[in-house]
Length: 562
Ligand code: C2E
Ligand code: MG
Ligand code: MG
Image 1 (tube, rainbow, N blue to C red):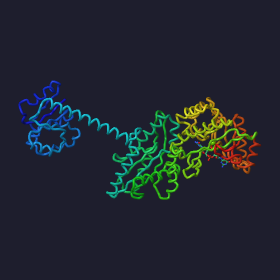
Image 2: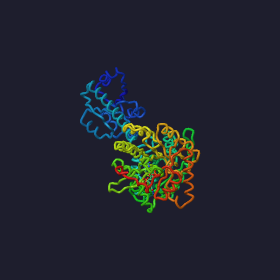
Image 3: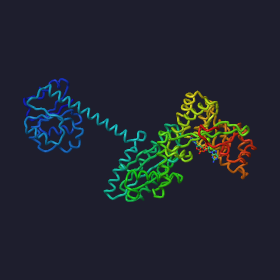
Image 4: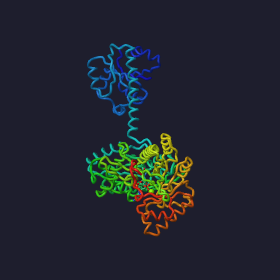
């Protein structure tokens, strides 16, 4: 521990050595200086190693009426604590004119060893503590302002920076652009990778993007696979489009995660000040809308916000936000539609179909919100709610003597979620049900897109006793090889092929072929979307096993008398 002392006139010779003798025994080092120049120069070289400054104010007042040297002002936060010694009232007044931080003072005349020691130790401790606290505060600030995965600013800091940028832009009469960047089909890429590899990919994308922005420009991660950039102080929007092109080109090169090369594209939405408004919220919303439109037009492009985007994109954004609250507010309900055996005309099982009931009583069909729920990841908790409800429903019907299996629709995102199997099993156990009580409907396209990732899970589910159905069959280009290998119990022919089965002989031929093929592979065949008697009788003649449709029964609330 080092104590640097400035005092031209100690009260007695060796004053400090005597007063601090106990300190010296404990290997404290005293460095005594007689002039402020000497003190500053030692401090300049050594300020990090000095633990405390003991300054006789009288000496300082006599030698240096000015304030502290420039370099000290810059390092003021790192300076050791200063203990001032005063002798007279003039010292005291002078002390208050000093601009550097005096932590405490003692009267030199009355100075006792123990008192001085205590004061010094206290200052050193306090100084250490305050450094620690400010370090922790920095850490905390980092945590609340930065994304832990990519180390980029998070949405909160992004919004804060945007506010500042806009103030500067207004002052300097310059433009500022906000860009929202979203990875195309990230869900699909992510599900084809291991969980940790998906994270790794996002880190790499973040790093690559950082090379395209200048040092002072803000690049942030504002959502799962969504990034934001603020282009400040630009002449006009042309620069934003040049930047967007550069970003797209940079990201076109493959990313290497472990040994896999991944190619990706991004969609970019751009809104700018002053063209699209001057409030941060407004620009963010408009950039988000422009991004939505870039996605809608197929991805891999950038779009500037234009007013015409308002309605469609607004619906999307509002739905996304409202969906987030819907689960909490218990706004979802399930309807049940029976699937009939076409030979016996008896109900074989039910399909659970999700509905979103708004506070005003209106009902929203799943086609209007499932994709949005999938994009935002909300489909995972929603899907778990469905599993829970369906298990309760099976149990309740069992109590009434109705033993029916219920089919649930499962999205890819939920299917590959690490908790999927666990949650299924927990809900079955809670209601004393076996896996055979459930049927899991997966769409053909989602299985084909992620074949290797899903086949293992399919086999596992199958071996546990769950029944598996390939939904919307015929729309997803699955090859016959997949059909042979997949442990699927049933094929549900898409409504699209049924709707014209009466008048269109080609559709009829396709349905006939699917039925023959399915029967040969030992799968149950279900026709969906039967709306007329003619359709039903054709399917019956073609020996389709099961059928579902408005003609037979519409989806109904569970208290309906089926
Ligand atoms: P899907 O699994 O193919 O469900 C069958 C859809 O066809 C249902 O639409 C049903 O109401 C409708 N439908 C049944 N019979 C007829 C008919 O005769 N004519 C016509 N025009 N339609 C008929 P819905 O309930 O609107 O659901 C649409 C899609 O939303 C479902 O297609 C399914 O893919 C998805 N979905 C529904 N509930 C859930 C869920 O809980 N989770 C997930 N991930 N997706 C769900
Ligand atoms: Mg279905
Ligand atoms: Mg279907």
